Amino acid sequence: MSRDINGNYTLPSGNPVAPDTLIESAWANSTMNDIAAALSDSLSRSGQGGMLAPFKVADGSLIAPGLAFTNEPTSGLYRETVSTWWAVAAGVGVMKFTPTQVTVPSGVTLRVEGPFSTANPLTFASLTLTDTLTVGGITTFNNEVDVTTGASLKLKNPVNTHLWAAKVDNANKLSFSYDGGTPALELNSDNSALFYGSLNVNNKFTIDAATGAISGTTGVFSGQVNINGTTAWLQVYGRTSGTHDISNRFTAYSDTNGTAFISAYELTIRAGLDASKAGVATFSSTGLVVTGTLDTSGSIAVTKASGNSLAFSLVQTAIVRWDIVNIATSGELRITESGVDDWLKIAKTTGTVTLPALKGVGTRHVVADANGLLSAP
Image (cartoon, rainbow, N blue to C red):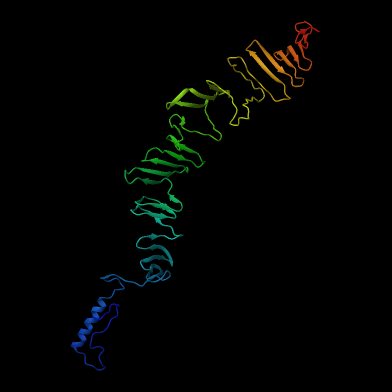
């Protein structure tokens, strides 16, 4: 059989024969046998027999792959360069193969419908999962990972086989659970979050899951804190030897009527961080009633902006109310009963102390001379 390494067939020696040569077995049988062997070594178009050695094809190109389909010659396999080849569909490279990497190019979606496992790292620009994906190396996602609603994306520790699972339900709620247990965290589509365990913030403070208590070395609230409930409490503790110190506690709370209470062993109103600013307590709002106790010396100081009269009331429940009033227009100080009857007037401008008419008695007043002696006018 005369076929060279490139597959070219050559007739055996003695061929071709000259015209009018007598057919003889010596050359005719050997020639026919050689042709028969060459035909047997050829690949049948109808699929009779198969290759006995590696099947080699031309490199081809994207629009004409070296290994293509009769009815679709633009789809098949094409060799791009050394150790690099492509799977081609309709003249488009859909998957690139090298000895160290398989690449799905941009614009092409890789869809895995059954379980998929690899011990090597994976890099995805976009991934859609409908079944299990097991990766033994580092996996990099350059874009979103789409998981069918109700399915979980699980991250397993290869050492102790424990795993975290992320799941989105039909209400668009994203939950994270450990080893198939109750979710530890739920994120809702209304931007709310629900923690089922204690919340630790950068090892500064912890919110206990059972009691809601906040503890830690540092807890700073720079915005509004809303505390809801029939009775709302806010407690701030100091610490002694690592435990809550009840003697160093400040409590603020309110009842269902909106009455607010402040409870502390000692309540001090001081200036702020700026030493030039005085500490001020301001009470405002129509109909505001203030009750309380004085200090052990019986002293209290109340101030009010200039231009407004100031009244300080001493109330004995169900008996009488005494008012000490500073009249803004005249600078006169009055002591009145229930804001109606004047018992005493002190006028700064005239230096007089007046006892107004009471119970039918005419007006009485006394005058102080330069030495401070009082006399009737």
